[in-house]
Length: 232
Image (cartoon, rainbow, N blue to C red; front, top):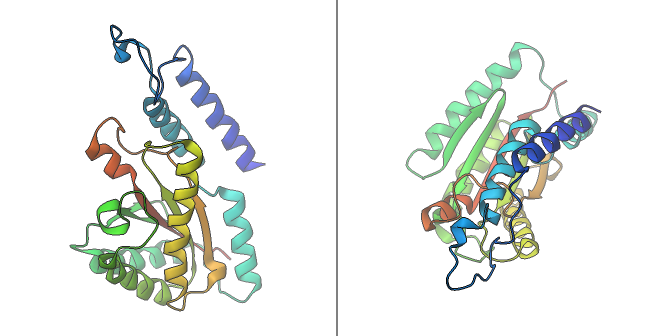
């Protein structure tokens, strides 16, 4: 019920932001030679940025609260100890510190939001353009992540893949899922309990920068690993 309310709010916010912004000049649209596409209204990428911001602000984790809560209950039932009260913040403080130390100089951004920790892994160290094959320079980074996650095993690990807006929605959705699966499979091969993982693809739906520039598209081609404490 809690997630349904959040999603309803997200839809309402998104709808309000998009009212009056309908256009026939989205991504890939052909314009007459004498017509400026910038005058056609909001492009596909601009609408995507609004949608991503609205949903992200309301819904939080890409997988949603319900999926996370179900995974937490399953792990506690399987004997993985949960955390409670002030122990949660202290546990995540120590894990955050360990991750910041191990990710220093790698290009991976460590972001703390409440009790959750997100590792933002940009495309220049993760995957080549239009590829779900892990780049060799990414292995040491993931090895360090795996060591920390093995030490701090009282967390759920959400691996989310993201793309830029080049290509169709369906293609980008598949690519984002393939990239997330590649990362989770590698981490699983390092001894991490596979039941800890939630693997999702967002396609191009959650940009963090404008897809109108190459630098923006590079920021949007990313993998995010979010660590959520298991609550008792």
